[in-house]
Image (tube, rainbow, N blue to C red):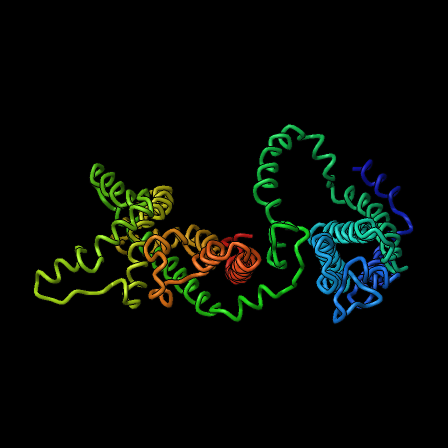
Length: 496
């Protein structure tokens, strides 16, 4: 303890001296962070255009194009769109993302300082936020300089120069980063914490085991995210992904002018029914199976309920067609045998919402039931024995013991399902409905719409990607809002 205190006293410096309810170091970093944030705002130009006549000739810019004398990282993509220099679009979009991330972290750091939201570990969380903000600002400023070099070299003329502002940002950010690391080192000793390098030295073998996992997600999840850039281009095979003309939000404008409301409504409503009714039925059947006393009957019923999950959607299509076909379908055969009139299912949209929901429940009930059944099997018998002693019957045991203990599992599955609320089950809808345009009003969802676009119009990849990005952003907002509401009610049930 004495050695620690001595180390702390030796680490106390001018930066840690109190000044107006804060330390001098925090005031210094706050000033540098505020200056960096102001220099990164959209109205501050990082790039200055020169030799406009040579630029006009090199790019064959249309006469009606609007070109400004200076650009920031926020409106640089407008220059790419106006000039038609598609090769400059992807690096400009990456620079924009990094700049926005740096500004958000800078704002978060200033917010923490202003309202003294330092966290529960001294100043460590504050310093970590500031460090991330400075690192991102450094990357953004050096990325802007690299963009200048790349753009000038690509076009073969010197037409863009850095403004003094972009040169000030790395200087201020590096200075703030050095101050933060100096204060962070002393705070770690005070809080008995250690950094990543110390943790890596102690558990390097465990980190080594994580390498395959990181490699998998980077290759299969993060690198493909660059394809989102398709949504902002008019793709053509001659120029490729990173050189196709940048068109901004024109793909989204076309998407919103189409039947987006109908597609969104169908997708969301179907998924709400799938999630709500599906979980209720899965819990219901899991409870029923768990209450069965006969072991062979329990195994048999569980297997029978689970088997439809393995039925291929292609087989499901054959089954549905043979049931509801107009001339020779099973349903119409029985209806006519009883003296009734044939029902034209494939030309009557009103039947299909119910049919799609019914077959989805039939196919997915067993898989979801197994998850809840496993949770029920994990509930201690002591709860039920105590309830029996108190005189609770079987229904009271289910209501007051089983259902409440299933709540955490239900909430986790709900959050996972809500994340994909805009991702309809393409195989289910496509195999059951196919390309029957008569049924589109009641059965068309975003996934089937995107599929039709990409197959009927091979060069409309930008529009299809825009629809996919719309789905992802919508799902992200839904899951964040839902998790926030759950966290306010009961933090233990929240996903993050």
